[in-house]
Length: 216
Image 1 (cartoon, rainbow, N blue to C red):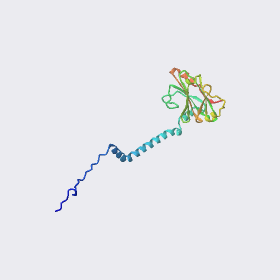
Image 2: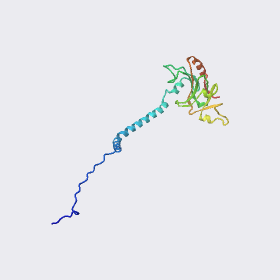
Image 3: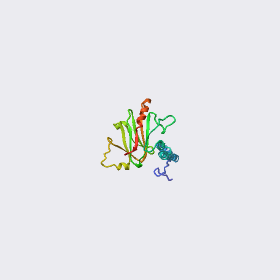
Image 4: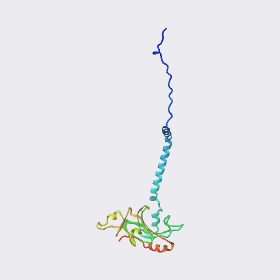
């Protein structure tokens, strides 16, 4: 009778059972993003495009507006002429959101024919001169506290006119202040504070002496 040695006898092995590990939190988040990215990405692209369109519209709207601040002020007076505006009321005003605490004079300028001389008086409280481009972008401002004199006087010119100044013509803030306009057309705004109602007529008379005229 043949016997099988224990060493040579085939051994029976129990197949092992593999239990997969549960996915980690990072893996679950990654799987969720892969499943939702086709929904999220179009939404994000639409939001970005909408924001860009809104920004571009806001930036270019002043260039196409027909009744902007420049057009309204141009109807009040002639170019290169300082005009004292009427006091704003609740129902009327040349410009929107005009502060009734200030007296305002404006000059719609055009530098095509040459530089301009701008003068504004110094008041007891506060007065300022602001310069804007044709589309209402501010590029320079000064107040009477910085002037150090009874009258603020400036020369307004474009870049070409400023470059044509004589080389020996010393331009300093102490004797002659030159303001360079980025364009030929723009707005000069003179504003003076009225401390109390009884002083309004005096401030209006003072602001009425402001000047915007061709430089001699």
